[in-house]
Length: 110
Length: 113
Image (cartoon, rainbow over all chains, first blue to last red; front, top):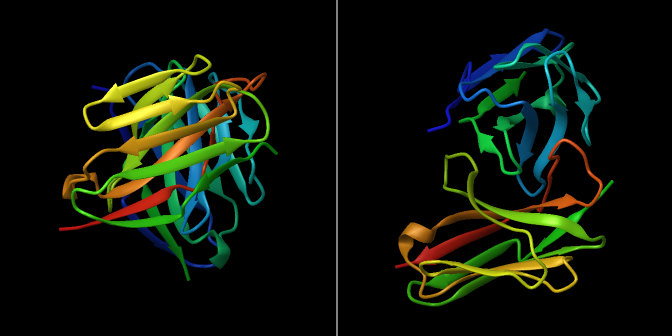
């Protein structure tokens, strides 16, 4: 079974803090994705990566950056957290067309 | 950017009734996928449709891909309480790279026992 893990299920941070969300997959997938999920807005793609050190902007990259130094790990960075970044963050990986999701990190920025 | 519209946003049904959710894209899709997210859970892949007019079944679930590859539907026959959750369609637009998907906003299904 594919396993996608995320570093925290719940996280509370203060406005202005730098926040790191980590995602690890154990199936040697080339593609990895970061989404945020908000009520009524569905899943919106923040960034994705199709190879180590490669990254592409998704639909809502503003305020975020990513890092992929190793194939199995994809990190989402909030350079200076703001209250409008309070959300559920979902990581996913894929080898073929469909995606496997991690359990999500619910981030609250106060 | 590319959009996939999904309706309805919410659906409440009595257990045993049927349920259908619809997705529509303004542009041709190379494939469409369906995911289910249980309350408190994460999206889980259900199925992928690739061919024009394709119909696939999984027990009580029937998935269709339109002839023009711009729309899709998921139909559940005789809903059960285990069907509760949010159903998302996700389309890959022709020419999109790296298996990037555009998700619909989802249909949240409630089943009244």
